[in-house]
Length: 548
Image (spheres, rainbow, N blue to C red):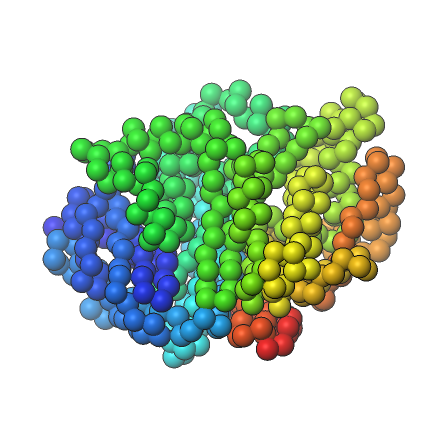
């Protein structure tokens, strides 16, 4: 009898349809709510994405998972998964967060990094699941957005570390995941955790990768890419990353209508036997032609639109004199999605668009120096600094920063339909949380409230030294110095301005954006290390962004 290896993950829900993803240990038929799908096989692993249709608006369906007609999940004493269709077109409660490292849920791993180097604090997603189980479904998030570092391929748990050693012994490559098989271990560990498994089965999730899903500093610069390509183990690692990302994360991002038209999925489902060669060929193409593979996607929640941008895989970094966060082809797609005539426009990018002013100017200065503004010797030193200090956010891609800023201006001023009440940028990556309010120049005509909300990490806090450095970077002295450096390197000041609405926080976090009509309310909540046996969430920031 087949068994469930991973899942179920509820990935998509609208007024009439839903999709649920599972992994099993063998070929079988998967059934949920009377809908069935055969598994497909990739590299000996078996998966299914079950499409559920015929749902009624504002309905709630409790489900189990059957494999070849036999119940496989949940256990008899555990709650069923839940599919809830939207109440209407004008309400949405979206939870969002990023950066969740896998580690045991017991001391010393639940301690802070200050108390123990192994400490990763209390998992914010585990606290969210515990809250959901104690509250009626009307108070749950309607959707969950994971904005990067869902797995850490370069910071593995003690258990995965031992499995890598057992599989390879000592080797030339670092003790990180090496290929598709080892990536599956990461996903099993991250999403098979019972502290979050029911949440993932009951809240539809959208997600996008960041660097640690592949490797730290992924696609930072042309120099970084050339260094990695010269390593004998890198190519197989990158293929494993793309293959596993397509299966475990990307497929579920697509609505049923797009799934039905997806040629790669159709080929994989129709394969006679193992479809590994098909998915591997796709990964080869994605690794070779970044401009031709679109990982960005869009979801509409009634009167709210979510556009999720790939700000990692699609970077153009070959020539340091012309760096782009997205290719021209991808920018064309983005421009088609960022429109008005909605109540709220949400733009997710794993990397924050707006940083503290000092960090913004420092990254812009570094980009100019690496491109030769101060000569070849300074450029080489700048590259070392770029990789060592992670100077790789939107500010380090000044052309793309200006391009996205102009997209925001165009939408907010009504050039692409009636302006939304709010335009909210949702990001992670930086391992602290903050909210910034944007102001455009006088005469720009922007009517929308434009806000950057950063919520990171779910579970992977900074240590005391790192927190001290971030706090300094948020101060006035650092801002003055960085501004002078940027101007000396020929960097023009940004056309828009922004201010932080509260000091940054450094806990394990989850953000919640509540939208009702034209109203928007943002809350950021954190966990506390001492509550590891009964994780709870505590508000650290709360603000009404727009009123109904």
